[in-house]
Image 1 (cartoon, helix red, strand yellow):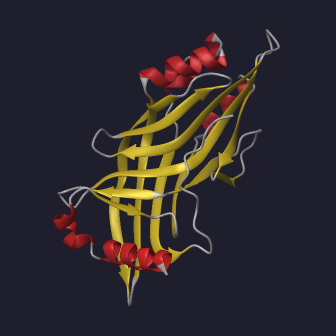
Image 2 (cartoon, helix red, strand yellow; image 1 turned 180 degrees about the vertical axis):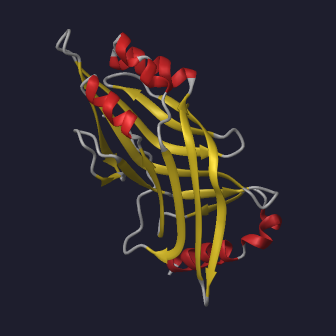
Amino acid sequence: MHHFSLRLSTVAAIVSLSAVSAHAGLTLPTNFLVANSVQEFTSDNLDSFATVSLSISARGTASAVKAGPYDTPAAFSFPITKVVIGSKLNIESGSAMGAALFFNRFNEDTGAVLGLTLANFTIDYNKKQVLADTTPKGGTTIKMMPLYDFTVKQALAMKYSFPLTITLHEQLGDLKLTAKAKEVMNTVLELPDVAQDALNFNFGTLTQDVTTKLRSKAVSTTPYVAK
């Protein structure tokens, strides 16, 4: 009964976003709603990954949703587990706790098998950055490392259908690795000189869709811990 009441209250909160100013800093759990963030890499990204024997796979609650031409899928989906609403009726952040991507690289020069995990993605709308827990294989996690800077391609839009169906949609683009992310990837994945220009590429788009439709089973909100 508690979970059912929580679902109803959260759906009601989303329905009444227009009146959310009385709830500054309100955190809405969305792990039981059909709410997803999808990152789609560019063809240039996929080509550059293949060039340096780098593949990416889904971990935790993440899943591949579009095939790519090489060993890496072209797009991954991350269940959105919570949204934080600010005092100006704006969304301050959205998180996909429990979702992760694993970057795997075989260094042909040394024979080393290298790995980097990005997990628990959070979009910070105030700083226009995507953050992620970042863990080198066998190393120490950097909590909420700034991963990408982004621009807004399609601003958040809400559609309402009678009686209680609401869809929120937006798309972020021009995902560019931050200086810290480039440093970590270079160090951990031992990227060669030929890969340096590729670090400046646009890393695709992030598309967010949140609905009031309930999942058949709620997604775990436990943060992903790299092994």
